[in-house]
Amino acid sequence: MQIQTNFEFFNQSKIISGNCALDNIPFELTGYDARKPLVIASRKVTERGLKKTFMKSFYDSVTVIGAFFDEIDDYAGITLAQRGATLFRSRGCDSIIALGGGAAVDIARAVNLLVTGKTDTLQPYLDGAPLPAHLKPMIYVPAGASRGTEAANIMTIDNRRIVSDVLFPDVVILDPRMTRSCCAECAAQSAAIAIEQAAMSILDENNNPMIDAYAYPAMRYLAENVKKGMKKPGNRDAALALANASVMAAVASANAGPGIARLLAEELETLSGVSTGILIGILLPHALSRIANRKNALRDELLLAAAGMEVYSATPQKERAIKGVEVTLEIYGNLKRALPASLQQLNIQKHLLAKAADAAAKRSGKRYTEADCLAVLDHAW
Image 1: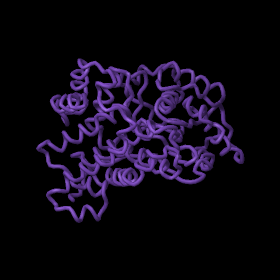
Image 2: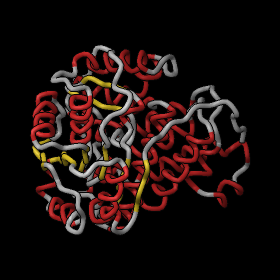
Image 3: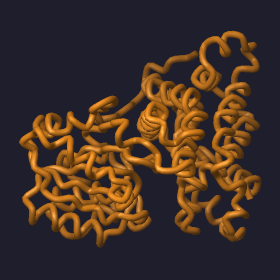
C-alpha cells in the first residue's frame, strides 16, 4: 500500500456512540455556551414515538428545549426553513439539534444559515455567496433512514445543493434507542448508501490515510452487520453498528468526493423524484462492475476492509483488487430483497438517462465520462 504524504482532510464533528449517548447532549451544548436548542425533527420520528425517548434525556439537566419543530417530511424546502428560523428567533434559541435524517437535517442547516446570517433568504448562498465562517452549534442525532449526507458537509434545499465545511455538524450522537430502523426497506437504502460511500472512498484515486481511517471501519461494520440488520431491522446492536457505518462513510465520502453511483442517483432523483437511497441501491452493483472493468488500476485495500486480514492475506496479490469488488457485491447482496431490481421497475422514463449521465459527468470533474455514466444507467435499466 502506497501512503500519500501530501493530502487534505477535514471533519469537525465529535462522534459519541453507545448506550445513553443521548444523555451527553446537555453537556456538549454547555461546551458551546448553549442551553436552549431548537429541535428539528422529521415527522416520522414523532410518529415512531422517539420524541418521548429523546426528551427524557433532558430531564435531569438545566437545558431547556426552546421548541420542537417536527413538521418535516421527505422534502426540504426554503419555506419550511424560514418557519424554523422564525421559531428559533421567537423562542430565543441559541443552538440546533437535528433529529432524524434526510430533509430534517437539511432544514436544520438551512435554519442555521438564516439565523446566523441574520437574513430571511438563502438566495445569496445558493448563488455562491460565502457562508458565515461560524454557524450556531448543531448536533445531529441519527434516527432511522439515512440519506448519506447528514454527517457530511452538504445541504440540499429545494433541490439546490450547497457544499461547505462549515455545514459539518459539531457533534453526532449515536444512541441505540434512536438508531433502530423502522423497516427493512429503510435499512436497505441506508446500508446501500453507506456501502457505496465506503467502497468508492477506498477506491478513489485521491484516497489518503485519513479517508481510509473512516472508510475502513465503515466497511467492516457493514460486512459484519448488514445481514443481521436486514433480517431484524430493529436489532439494537446491528442498527447501531450500521448507523456508525453511515456516519463514517459520509465523512469519508465528503473528503473523497461522490462516486459515480451517488452522482447518478442525485441527478435522477432531481429528474424523477425517486429517492437517492432507492436509486443507489439499484445502481451500486452496476457502478462497481463498471469501475472494475476500467483500465485504471484498482486499490486492493477494498478487500482488506470488506473481508478482513485473513482473506486478504490468503488471496494472491494480483487477484485482490477484483476480489475486493466481489466481496463488496456479496455484502450488497443481502439488500436485494428489499430494493427494486431495475430503473424500469420504478417507471423512470428512459429519455431521462441521457440527461442524468450528462449532468453527473460534468459534476464529477472529469473523474467519470458521460460514456461511463450512461453505461451504468443502461445496465441498471
